[in-house]
Length: 179
Image (cartoon, rainbow, N blue to C red):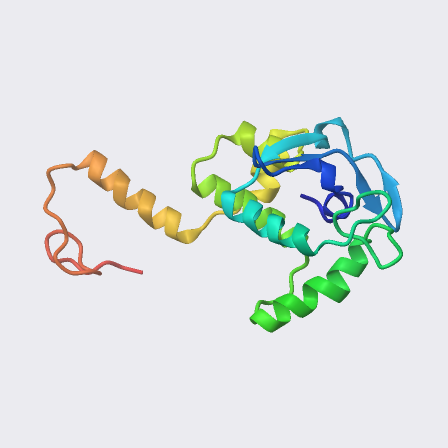
């Protein structure tokens, strides 16, 4: 989710029994608004582990008049700048993770979905992109291990009967690999 969509979540947007979340609003600079576009209104599955965390969170959650999942003491929804500066940065600093902002997690999530072989259309729907090219060209990043794994698999397909390498860094026939 985008940061504003996360801030715009209300408790009734969660269906933890069916493990779903509905995204249909955003909060920007304290104002509640619709999502970026019609493609941004969506419903998608949550992991069992995330649902368990949310159930524990809801046991300690303080109800507010509008049912905001993440609200200030006065009952207004969190603003994304508040989330990043007061909540997110201290958390990632304590974990020793380099600061990259919440949006970096969207890029990481889409890249992980690509590595897991999730169909492009599903990736596009989960993140609310109207164009598949945006999901693929901007948000999906190449991971070097994938390139190495692909090269190995391609070699196995093209030369399935070739002898396997006995030692890393040496090509079949004993020639050293050039880096």
